Length: 434
Image (cartoon, rainbow, N blue to C red; front, side):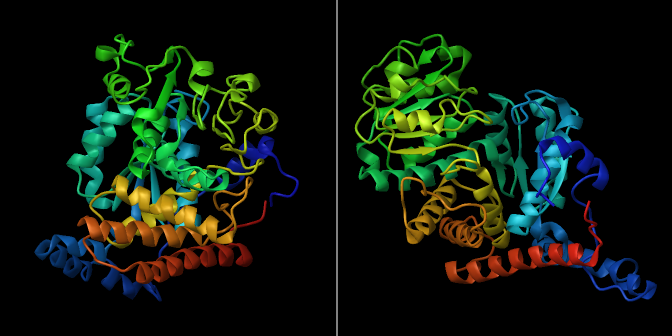
């Protein structure tokens, strides 16, 4: 279908299909008499079984493989605060990716409220129907406290892709980029441009992976985070916490000063180009790594960073090498979490997935232009599912125990079957070619 189509055709195609997902039966129905099993009176037996043992809901209903994609539409893609209705195509698209890449059933839930307390109340109320919650496109700082509250108050995984998904893929990319340039995690100086939901979580995860937090310098729209930024102590406590934990050298200034003497630049700020200048990259250490991840226009074009001496460059775009794409992460991690009926998704599970993503790329052969797998290398999803599920088992977060090999085979089968069903619907014409 994609041969001669462009983004300009998106509205026409959305209108043609009237959305991207639907619900269809998965049980065998030969005739109306079968509803005596699937509905009344037979369904009462399933209800009573769950009443006797609540966790049987995972065995007898869709809960085991179904998540909610929840958004208030306050920070959508590069569009900003566009509201719940306008955000719905994005959440539906996310649900499509969950199914196609991870075999996960996802339901878009766009909420007509921006109030954090009400969002918590709504998500808690719908918890019985879902095996997990994916928070999406929610403004900061609300996204931080909302994630923490829901993680603490729900007994199913809660995930914010802008935080944990981004952190996982960036961590995987960093692990391999450092191998390419011959440097170690605990030795490098890291400049982080942007202190939003993405980079705050990236900072936390790369520190857990081994980066020395004291050697990290973070830059927001007003400059470098340091102990001199007392304005943040009360207004933005999460930033003030970073002021106290990072930048032990005591740097002040802006992006230029942060990049001087840095080995790694991780930029997740505003759209470029020109946010990061070539002359600033030239002042980084030997064989610098530049992750320029603003979307759709990176903070510095990859060819400019290369011209300035960058050894490894990554972006969030698919038309350049080394795409750091959240879509490499969330379908696999949720696949693993759902398969073991996890009670949550920990940083350690994210780290296990990051190492597995990095390992798969390393096995295929690392280079300056290949540090993470592409989305076409679909074996990455069952592999990271296995890594995350096994880590959940080790941490006591899994209701079902598993081994890495057993989960890998199970996840691979589910994902393959999801794709096979999709292909059969296309071949039969039930999904018409536009």
